[in-house]
Length: 284
Image (cartoon, rainbow, N blue to C red; front, side, top):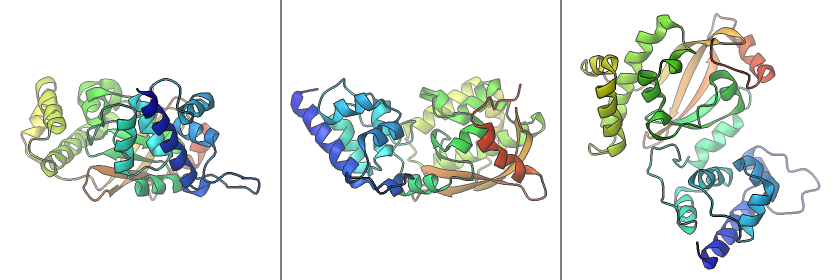
C-alpha cells in the first residue's frame, strides 16, 4: 500500500467511526463521552482487533489489514455495501464475492441482530455460510464463523464431515438432510444460473456424498422459512427450539433466531445459556 492509500484509509475509518452512535452497536453512551460516535477502543473491541493496531490504522500506519479484518471493521462501523467495497479498495484487497464468508451484512439486519440480546440469533447466507453470531448463538451452536473455503457452508460440512451432525439427534438426520437439499436447490435457482459459488458447491457434493446425490435426484425444492429442531447440547441436554428465518430482499442472507418450542422445558434451558456461556457445545 502506498502512503497516500494508508492516509486515506485512516481518514475514512475515523470519519465512519465518528458517525456511528453507541446505541447503534448496543453500547451505552454514558455522561462522560466527549467524542462524537465511537471511541477507538470500542471499534477495536467490536472488530476483534487490538487497540494499538486499530490506532495505527487510523494514523495511516501499521500493516496492511487482512480481508478478515476489513470484513470485521465493516461490520463494526455499520458500513453500507458501497462503503465496504471502498474500504477494501483502499486497503488494496480484492472485494469479496457476494455470498462468501466475508460477505457484507446489511446494516439493518446487523442492527436487528444486535437488539436480540436475550435469544440465540445469527446471520447466514443462502448457502448456509455463517457471517455473524450473537453470544447466545455461539453458546447454543458453537462458533460457526471460523470456517473458510467450501467448509464455510454448514450444508457442505453436513454432507462431508460426520462431526457436523453431532449436535443433532441421529433420528433427525434424514429429515434435516432432505430439508438442506431442498433449500439449497431453491437458493441455487434464485441465483444466476451461472453463479460459480452455488454450482461449485453442488458439483462437489454430488461427487463426494452419495446421500446428497440421492436426495438431489428427488428434485425437492423448498426454502427453510421456519423449522423445529432438537439440539443435543453437551451441558444442558436436549433442547427443542423453533428456528425462524428473516430473509433479505435479494434472498442472499437470512437472520435466524431460536425460540423455545411450546410444550417443552426449553425456555428455562435457553435462559441458562447465558450462564453456560461458550462452554463446549458439541455432544460427546
